[in-house]
Length: 172
Ligand SMILES: [Fe+2]
Ligand SMILES: [Fe+2]
Image 1 (cartoon, helix red, strand yellow):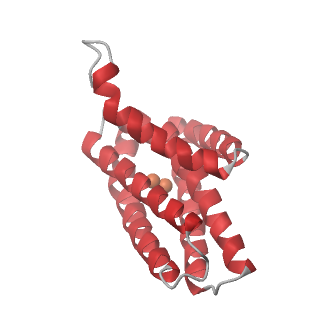
Image 2: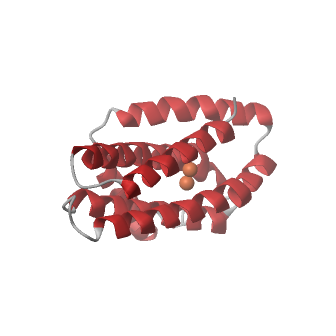
């Protein structure tokens, strides 16, 4: 199994969960679905950035930067859903927007970003990435969800101020 098969399975699962969340009504089932969505998406995006995006940054910079921005947007929407009352009438609307953003993200990722990855890494390496991804994703799954949401924010800050604190000559 290679990294693309694993990521694709995650994508299908996440979009499926979001469809269920969108159809849900306020109550325990909605809460459980929301927790699963946040749990899966935060572990997936953090692991994906480390295993794939960071390695693609110098090979497909624009695409990778765009994908990272979309991850940040997804995480912001997850944070907002996490702090929203389950019976808030905007809940379903926000889930719909999250689904749309994620659908677009997955489409571009699986087409353009993976094309760049496949041109950069041979099939054996793509298999190794699969193993690394699973280990990291499952390790992240054990961390508290709030910590994972915070980690995405922290990465954003580090990206934003990195040029200020990086030693001269090491600027990206
Ligand atoms: Fe992904
Ligand atoms: Fe992604």
